[in-house]
Length: 274
Ligand SMILES: [Mn+2]
Image: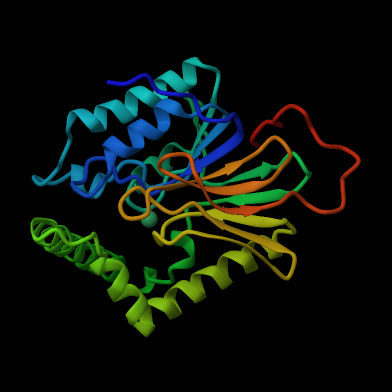
């Protein structure tokens, strides 16, 4: 394996929807990303492990999945502070919220204070789904359907590759073509922004919908770190409080500069997570 060049230092990094233990997790790409990562704090914003897959016979665990876990250990040894916020696919872990393992803290949600003084709510995002009225049945069906489409996507692209055609995402095409999916994303974004505003915070960092986002609406930041199933992205905060969406090679996909008005007090050290 070639020597890995370390990526620029980041104050904080957020990743979610890794779905370790499922066949659709891009574990090798994530291990490559994590092995080059250098950051003060790493937030695992839910669905890191897919317990729905792991609890079934179709559980998938390869050497690459183990490499991801080892890369997290290495980051911890290098001094990175790790905060784990379980999502809906690793929901049972929410029972241990409040626990501080020797290696990381487990939290239902966190408030991240950026270097330029913004306070961001960090949550997985499934609270904004509104599917609980069906007792999780719709959630499970949506999940099953999603994985069927991803499998179809894999088969299709294997064929396309065979004929020398470039990669084309069926899942993405279907999502963008379907008005229902777009309305779902819009409602999710609205609910997340409203929640941050209600709590008197400056923005929200979330995942869950496997759709990246980084923008300000009516003065409130919306940042969605994407996933490691389709997009292969992370959200990062620079030393000056800038937020950026990173691709798997640490390249920048989108950038949101620091707050324009400088704040009198910018904490040099990361404050403790409550
Ligand atoms: Mn989720």
